[in-house]
Length: 152
Ligand code: CU
Image (cartoon, helix red, strand yellow):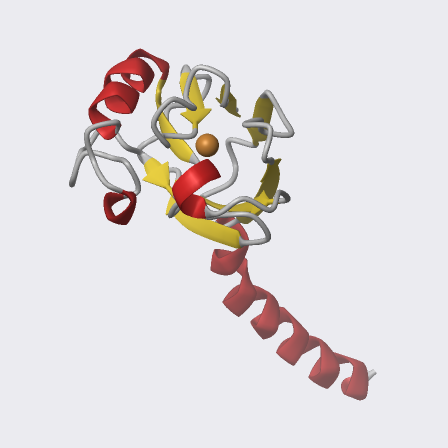
C-alpha cells in the first residue's frame, strides 16, 4: 500500500508538469504542389484547439524554382488578391511577397521540384470560423493555386 502511494506521487507530479504543454498543441498539415501549377488540396482544416500549425509544402515536380516555383501563403480571403498582386512585383528572394506585410499571416519560402519547405506559425491571430485563403504567390499562379484554410 505504502509503495503504491510512493509510486503515485511522482506520477501525479509529472501530470501537473505536463499539463501546460497539452494546451500548446502543435498541429501538422501538409500539401503537395506540382509542375502542372496545382496544389494537391483545395481545403486545409485545422482544429481551433491548435495553438500552432506546422505546414509542410512539397514540390513533387522537376522544374526549378525560377520557372515553376511554389510557396504557401496564408491571408484573410479579403486580402488574398491584393497581396498576390503586390507579390508579383517582388522577387524570388522576397518569396514574391510584399516585405513585412501584416496581411500575410504565414508563408513558406519558394521551392522548386523535389524540394520541401515548412513553416510553423501561431494561430493566436486567427479567428475561429474566419474566412482564410491559402495560395501560391509565384507570379501568375495564385488564380489556380489557391484553397480555403479552415480554422475551427
Ligand atoms: Cu506556384
